[in-house]
Length: 277
Image 1 (cartoon, rainbow, N blue to C red):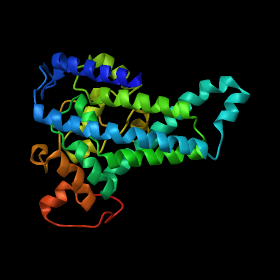
Image 2 (spheres, rainbow, N blue to C red; image 1 turned 60 degrees about the vertical axis):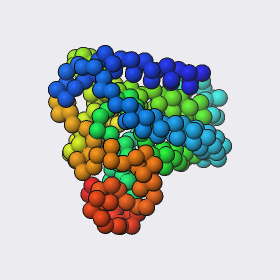
Image 3 (cartoon, one colour; image 1 turned 30 degrees about the horizontal axis):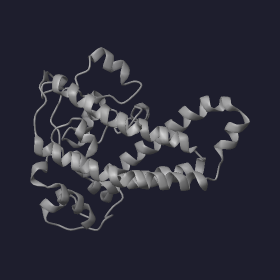
């Protein structure tokens, strides 16, 4: 059922982008047609959607089964606790996802994986598909550890993943939203305007606005950037069209980012804890 809803949601966003897509001056224009880019992005999405669900199900089931703390017992004792536990657990899982995203920008090996996502020199809902499968598996394993420690119920884990997928497509969409409404909405969830800054091609911008579902962590940890006027996407040191999907998937396995490849130098997977990229 969710798969049907998700496909419908992506299709709906795609239709909106044909009418409400934004150009470099933040003006509404027709969606830029680029079939080769879409094919590449959707290829990443297909690979991820084939592999990730199985890993997610296995990790989540094992994590719930061997959890140290049992939230089910709390819920059985008082059903009203669900009112607190559902939003609390969603916030916790999103908090963990926020910090995983930060580490993807700070640790060399993870940046090599995450770089694939930032190479896209345009942004629309298909950008949400282009994530390295190893990055997704890393996020799943990290959340699995949290589920084990806190005993988060499987139903809430599934709910989080569903919201994450829907919100991920939404905040990557290139849709013009009324500024006044967007200002209110981005206090509650990540909006396209909020996340668009994260895909600008300068270091100070793509190292900001890390949030996945909720914007609170960016506000709290001072990683929020509200420069919504600039609109140049991608990475300055590389062009996406020069690297095929297979090459982008394989490069991180050699412990090298595209920047390092351009500099023609090799380095270990974890040369340093904090990356300077």
